[in-house]
Image (cartoon, rainbow, N blue to C red; front, side, top):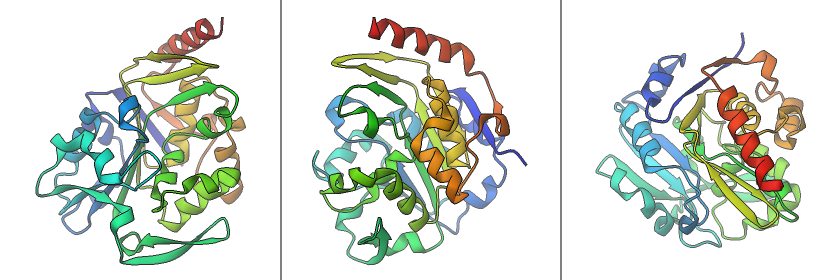
Length: 274
């Protein structure tokens, strides 16, 4: 059966979930939810929007707890950077700094033993949400074009020296994916798309969300939106070899329209390069 990826307006997250099989198993009173938000430096604004996180929170109304997840990094303490979503927090929805959790279990990432919070070895619903970006710039292209919701997993490394995994980043990301038991729901927040060529930057605003339970199918559709060929994205190539998910667009059922926004983004990127 083809995995389904839903493309909706960024204010229609709940309608996307109507097409998700198994939602009743993800939104229950019995298991907590972890939302790995996409952020590096909050000053850039290149991160999951408050609106999108609030939509996720509202949709997982049965969950006993929702932990908005990040770790310390070179950009600053995890809790400090999670303040950007503070209006979403309450008694049930709390920021969760992976770097401060001392109840850990060692997992192997690119041959290195890394302590991960033990809670990820227990039943949970894990959501990864990040924004789409495309860069053509020496020193950035290989790192930034490795994906969105999968690239987001690098933030699961609890220490600040994450850059040591850049040399084998594709392998590291998929090792993390497998170590935490996968992604239950992937949400590419394409409210904004960030484009870069050399030192020039531009932001396009499609106001879309791309949602699905097969994170690699979602990644492929997100890559297509910004002009990548999914078959050429390294993280999808390696995922296909590991049999982790669907990466071919012709084997993904896409509900919703991408092509008009893809054309807009393509024209914007061409203007940026000219």
